[in-house]
Image 1 (cartoon, one colour):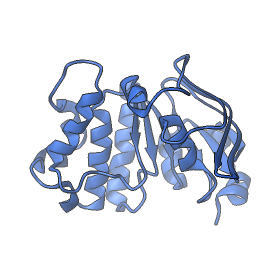
Image 2 (cartoon, one colour):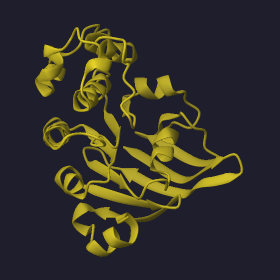
Image 3 (cartoon, one colour):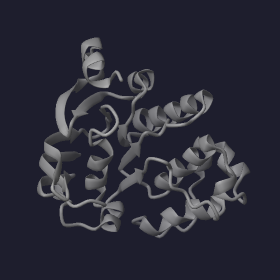
Image 4 (cartoon, one colour):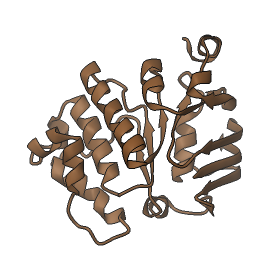
Length: 231
């Protein structure tokens, strides 16, 4: 579904991503892993068009994304939940969710009911401001807002960061439901190994801007964890 070939990216004179090759297979959940500062969020920003790339290709369902703007990528069915959630704190839950409707490919102008089936707490708090929600509730709102787009590919940047354990478990269950029951393709950045092993089919590891390992989650060995993931 998503293929990245020979991707290079720079911040000024600093070469941050080096010849990245990566593939996200239709219907699977793929996890991008690595210590802080190795280029994971930078790579997601390149996929979404928030950062320009120096060279390489990004193809989505056989269509090149390199020259497309962020909103065009969203209309193709690519939804992004950024690190830190980035909801609008002064807007209500309902208003935050409706922002995603503008990028839909159909004419639907109301929040789909299945969003509230996945996250019942959002229905209870529709008129509450986003900034008044807990961290876990804000994360559910951010994921719900992305799902309003009716995406084919959902990209999540550290969805469990700073979240209490019970909500982490709920988010894991939602990702499994979306991926394995509904068939939504998922790419996520995640550091928590139990979470990765619960939700992901495949993994890639970045180190110093390079892809250094990849494979099925069953191949995520203790030696790789110790070498590239343990702080």
